[in-house]
Image (tube, rainbow, N blue to C red; front, side, top):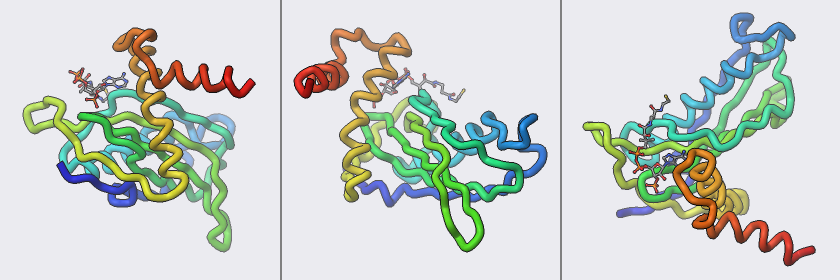
Length: 174
Ligand SMILES: CC(C)(COP(=O)(O)OP(=O)(O)OC[C@H]1O[C@@H](n2cnc3c(N)ncnc32)[C@H](O)[C@@H]1OP(=O)(O)O)[C@@H](O)C(=O)NCCC(=O)NCCS
C-alpha cells in the first residue's frame, strides 16, 4: 500500500465564537470546541485513508487557555501516525488576533479508524513524517495508542512494550 505524508491530510477550519458557543464565563464552551475538533479530525482521517473514518478514542485534550466570545479560532489537524486500520490525529488550536497574530491555546489527540462501506475497519496507508514536529509526534504515537488500549480494556499492560520503555528510559536518565 502507498504511503502518504502528514501534509496530505492537513485540514484547517476557522470559526468565529458566537454567543451560542459560549459558557457562563463568556468563553468558548469546551463541548463546542470538542465537536469542532471531532469534525476536523474526521475530515483529516478521510483525506488520509480515502474512506469514511470513525472516532475510536480521544487520547488527550488540553484546554490550556480560555477562548473569549468573539474570537477567531483556527483548528489545524494532520495525521501524525497510521497503524493498521487506525490513524492518530493531532489538532492544534490557535486564536487569531489583529494583524494575523496567532496564539496557541489548545491541543488534542484523536484516534480514528478507517471504515469500509459495510462498516468494517479497513487498512489505511502508512505515513512518512517530514518535519521535526511530525517526527516527534510519530515517535510518541505508539505509546499513546498502547495507553489508550489499556485504558479501554483492550490491552494487557504487560504487553505494552513501547509504553513500558518510556518508564525504563526515565529511570535510566535518573
Ligand atoms: C472503533 C471501532 C470501529 C473498532 O472496531 P473493532 O471491531 O473493535 O475493530 P478492531 O479491534 O479491528 O480495531 C480497529 C482499530 O481500532 C483500534 N482501537 C479500537 N479501540 C481503540 C481504543 N480505545 N484505543 C486505541 N485504539 C483503538 C484497534 O487497535 C485497531 O487499530 P489497528 O488496526 O490500527 O491496530 C468500533 O469500536 C466502533 O465502531 N466504535 C464506534 C465508533 C463511533 O461510532 N464513533 C463515533 C462516536 S459515538
